[in-house]
Structures are given as C-alpha cells and as structure tokens.
Image 1 (cartoon, helix red, strand yellow):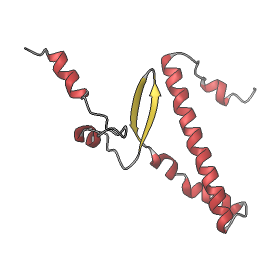
Image 2 (cartoon, one colour):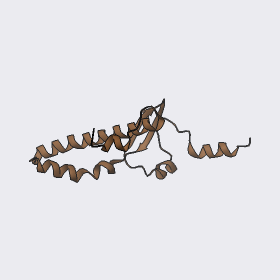
Image 3 (cartoon, helix red, strand yellow):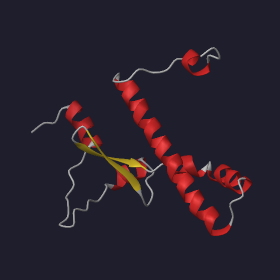
Length: 124
C-alpha cells in the first residue's frame, strides 16, 4: 500500500496514542519537544476536540513584580500580601485567557474587532 505525500505529511502532524484505564495519555516525545512543554499544559475543549497547549506562565510571571509592587504600595504585607497576590495573579491570568478567546473569535469573524479610533479617540 503506497502512501501519498499529503498522507505522509499528515502522519507527521498526528499520532494515535493509547488512553490508560486512569484516562492518562503519553504525549509523543517529538510533540513534547517541538512545543517545549513543561510539567503542566493547558487543556481545553474546542469544537469537539481536546486541545493541549503549552502553559504560558511566563506571561503572568513577567507581571508578578508589578503586581507585588502595587500591593506593597497599597499597604499589604505578610500573609495578607500573599493572599492578595494570589487573587490578583488569578485575575490577571483570567484576563489574559479572555483576551486570547476574544482574539480567536475576532479571527473567526464571530465578533468584530475594535479600531484604533475606538480605543484611543479622546472625543468618546
């Protein structure tokens, strides 16, 4: 049985993997390395498929110092600082996730994008 070039290219992009009795899967090494995955990944349901993406913690980590500086300036310290930091960091991650979802919706045309004037027009 001969495999066409299109089929061969598709085979490089997908693999059949087993699901264990505990519902666990093993990510093929080449996928793991190509995506530079760490100890955690983001998993979501999209259009009837499970999508596994690298966890982009570095985005919120870059702002951790800014969040801490702001909380210290507001007078938080000790255990209360730690509690409030966790809340603010979770809020930040949620905002990033919602922005990414909006970008996907704009790209597929299901919601309109804002123009420069919509955002920065001083007369509105």
